[in-house]
Length: 141
Image (tube, rainbow, N blue to C red; front, side, top):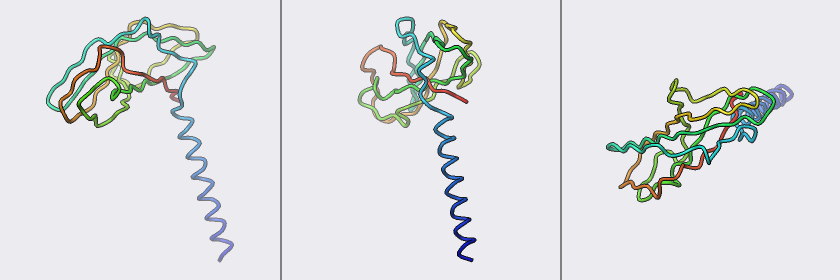
């Protein structure tokens, strides 16, 4: 009986380890695909009741030799003051197809892509400046 419990415990630990590694692999920061800051800008900020929507125009470059599927996370808390955002980091949606992911070919530059970040907030919201929020490109595999 104790042997069976030991086997089950070992299997559970193994499954949890595999799941943890898989989760790390699914969304890891991407250095092959970058946002070209000098060709990107904050387009618009819309504030209504308790929602904030930030629209950015970005250009993305795939520096690798392979096709990449990526998503973009925006660190929105860094550009607002006097408010608390529900989510300090928000996964952006590409306006073209309302998807959180984009596929980019090897050595390709995609210019002028609209990405939208949306979350709720509490407090009196103000922007610190009109700069892009800090964004991180994440692999989607």
